[in-house]
Amino acid sequence: MAGMSPLFHRKPARPQPSQPSQAPQPSEHSENHLVTLIRKPGCHLCDDAQLVVEKVCAELGVPWEGKDITEDRQLHDQYWEQIPVVLVDGRQHTFWRVNEERLRKALTDQYK
Image 1 (cartoon, rainbow, N blue to C red):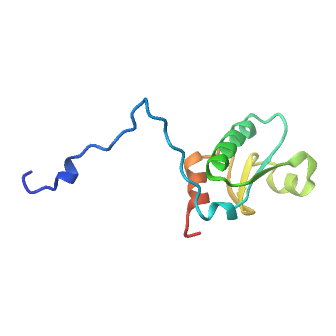
Image 2 (cartoon, rainbow, N blue to C red):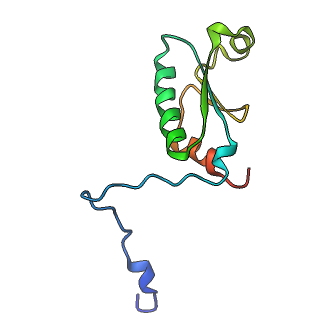
């Protein structure tokens, strides 16, 4: 394809294994968010969700809190069938399984 720009022939750059990967930089909007993980004791999906929430929030500098449905009747009545539930700024973001990239996007999206 003679007329095609050389840009289309480049392969995407890949980080070299010897180079440390860089974590994403916190968004200027990330400090305005709060992530809430609603969970219950003994819930393996809750443990998995917490690992994702901790990782993403630490990378982006976003505060997060955990709430136990066994200690809050209103949360229990509202979310008991969906545990774990992740709220972003008080609005339900997801339940059962937390997708790391989707959570990161919700916390860095400048058009929210």
